[in-house]
Length: 111
Image (cartoon, rainbow, N blue to C red; front, side, top):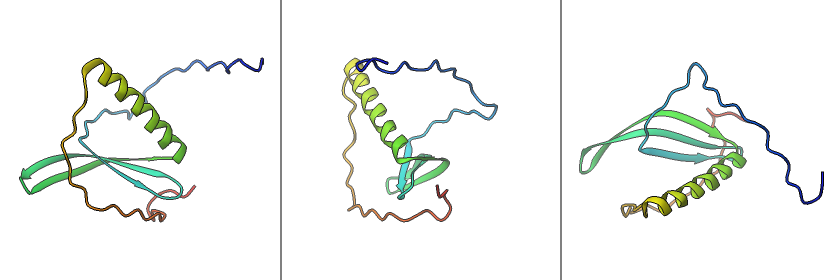
């Protein structure tokens, strides 16, 4: 292979498994350990101005490399979306101080 040639991408065939499903989520919680990132998807429903109901329905584990690749892909797609349709405005959110503790999840995989 010549030095300036990029490797050719393989042809990819997309298939859906028998248990494939699509879901809507308006809540994503991100947890991490030394080994992986955990994305917990759910639906959040306001009950009162001071109370919400959050029902988690799916947890996905990603390697740190896949999490970073996902972050890059999302940033690129969000930029394209905003270029086509306009800026995505986020409501201001008061955030509590964040403390990150990296410990293995006792219920998660250890790779």
